[in-house]
Image (cartoon, rainbow, N blue to C red; front, side, top):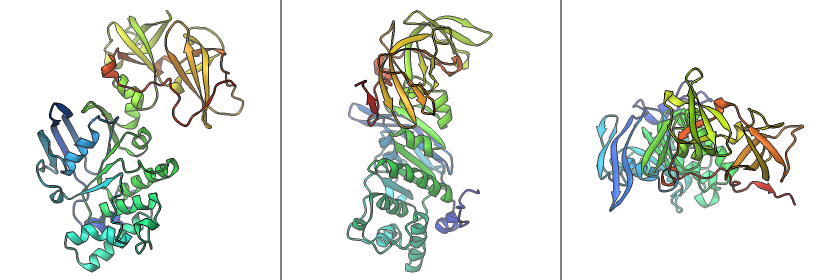
Length: 405
């Protein structure tokens, strides 16, 4: 499907841009923001292609929202430069940047109808009544709220109010759309539905989008590229598959998905297979591929995703770990085992797809754990301050945990 043309065949980009360029290129160059001694954003550089959906993903305090606010013009950088389509907008006021913004709080005018809420940015820009009517009705149709223009915001559900906020942000045809945690207030099922809806609308318009979230599922579902942030810097940028399969360090591996981390020491390097031989805390030796031909020296961390771990029938070279099941979490589509490893302080998580005939080890049972060497990732050992990652060994909120009672 051509960019800008929805499944209905209507060219939405032409409706809102009226022949103008529908997407912007964004360049952030060495952007820094300080609040006294606090460095919120630290020499950040980023190039967003026209029509790209790029997500800033990171924990609270990583600098992602501050970056968005500087791009929107609500904050000015301490140093650095912001360019949109080559034009320097670093200190240009927000209303002169021609940017649409959607926040987590819908910020709808409670005393105005849905139609008038969406029409507001057109009215302040001096559009005529007929053009306003045409654009608002088109925006309502695009966000699947056709015929709802006379209703008041209080008469709408949370998801419908978020659609109105999105319609208001796109109705004047901005080349760039900024979205800051827009789905945070919605329940899980509605949030998942809106993720697909936002992506559909973005593809229909061809608009450049910078999206901010701490939710990895949102980032993985919608993004063309993801920039993972921590401590005001971009740690790694790439497609969802690149970041998930080839994380640059422990932080990215632990923040984007779950990952088991096992401390070890590089014992040798096999040049033929390009794999390092790593001694784990329990004394076993395992192989792991070496990224870019660079062999980490000394202390390292071996990372393996829970879904790549396998329960083996017994001990052997393909089952380097032995441990006792501490908890069993039933997730519906999968089962998670939390296994305390013998000879080390680690708890390893094993995620098994729930299928007919699956035998699930019970709490207290001794199991052998292995994985394909190609599924392991090797990282230089990070200090605690650098790692700042969630631990995979704690059951996530909402999981049903079987304590063997």
